[in-house]
Length: 333
Image (cartoon, rainbow, N blue to C red):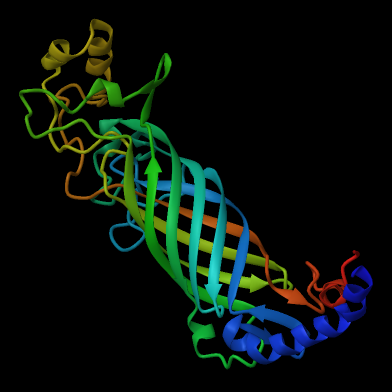
């Protein structure tokens, strides 16, 4: 029996290959280019990303930019970010990705000396600060417009710009810096969350959804190795990443009614840290309740195309014929 299997293994294998080459375009979605690369209709890519993360919140901001897409964006206090991703791309045109990232955003009003942008004027005197870790999971779609108009009998473009959008879920935890180190702000309810005197102010959650929108460029270093550069902004469904939302200031005498003695003392210290004592400390709104927080990343991605194979399919495009031989080799029985 084993001898018969070995005898007919090669004919069966060749027949399978011939049948696959004739029906694969419709059934399996494979394309064969003159370079000897087998391109799947649905290409799977997975990898890592490294870059920077920054926030656009009620604290700090850009001291000069008045309006436009970069109003409120500043490179001061930019932090490192990293993550993992996987993408399924249909004919290199439409892609669906799942991505997990981590980083940190922070802001300091003390950096806004001589601010001229309307949104930043007075923040230096307000003197608030925060930092918060960000942990997120994103589900996004991407569209490669140049590939959309490419003839499918030609190799995909090595450089491909694209746009992307989707939904993300993230966690955060705002903290403020004091003489005794970093302090969690959520338990202190600095804007009267949950106080009977402020019935419309509910305690916020330390997680939220956001909608990311961005642009990117993909470059195929080889059939297996891909590099990407992306800029992606997430607009959150919350305005509490920095623990600042309300435009007015809470009555500090109320903290003692809802917090422990130690917490109340800390809340009275942190709810308003203005450098101006006379005239009264609340010389400007605490926050802007009409605009939610946001954060953005600029990253470089390194990915592997997991199911693109064939001649010249080594990671750096080397002469790798092993994949082709494996397709015709009989198993050892």
